[in-house]
Length: 486
Ligand code: MN
Image 1 (tube, rainbow, N blue to C red):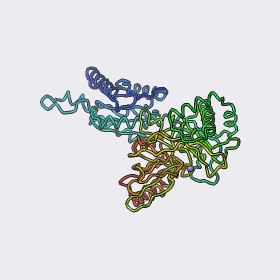
Image 2: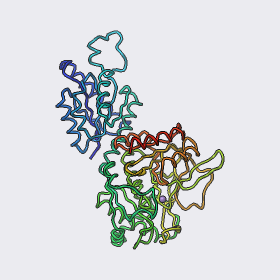
Image 3: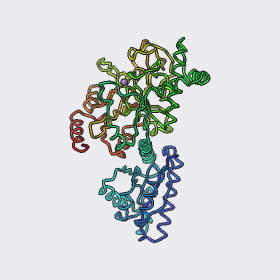
Image 4: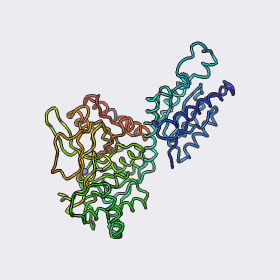
């Protein structure tokens, strides 16, 4: 269902019907303006001017019940006494944005009178509204600015992405094949808490179910999939049998994902009984199509990647599962090399990925086909989710992805190099102190603000590491977090 945002404008009856008509006309003009602007990624639907407690409750209940409504945006063109809003707002369970704007940009200095003041008093009315949302401790975003300005609209667009991510999160199903890698702590987590806090339904299926589907894949299906691979990627291997096996894996995996309504999945190199290779190229191509993936049973990053996929609708710079792998500590030129055993999405490739086949040191299976490429350059975020025991903590880290200083001709996997903010030492210390995983999702389109808004909507802890981070400040925030979020 297409995601739409309801625009609800508050007022009251004191001003008479003419003013209410004018308010509605202004709101309609604004909604049309938003919908004509490419920086607003989802449709805004004007749902009318509400003036009584019953009307307000009715629109909130209707928003809750409409699966296509991804969020509610309110604005008080005039003054709308906020006790009228308590009944509705306490029921509302959709992401919520309060905009503080005004229809006219400038004061009409020559003609301004009390009629004008009474009709255009959002400076006043939005404060009354802000009080009640604060008093109700509502999870919300507040954005102030002139409604025709690009910066204001772009922030609305950004929040909409967070809201769409929240709606996707509440409906997310994760397919687990096998369990977590043995003895690993950070990929563990409370799946009941995840469903309560984030809406994620995470369930395990035996790898034998995948083996059965792999065995049913026909030669014609394999040929079609290999043709897809060769049209998208360069082939640098003679071992086409290995490539064909990945084609079988992908077809079987996608069948499983589709039939169960899953948008994310995990596998484990320790649980491949009956399979010839660890899914490599197969998982990469599925990620490229938008499925969330987590290696070694890491369902948290798999689900997070699917959420980030929903938030990134229409954006093109890309996102992927990634792992902090190894460091370059050359003085003044420090960087992190991110990669994985195999599974990085081709969505973040700088140039056409190459299909290669190499041995895999762990797992004891046949040499898997994989895509090898260098990641794009540019500003990006690393996002991860950890289970702190009783709560989840989301961490977003601003990084600058760079072109590697030297070629790495022997590296048999896809990789991305980045410089952590604010610098190599502080950035890594901050991530490690926060308990950040080696696994994360890298996104070149989203920013920490998108993730912070998502975390606020879901009601989970959020830690941002960026250009202003100091360890002293971070320690205090983490200590406060243990009080606030326990
Ligand atoms: Mn890993």
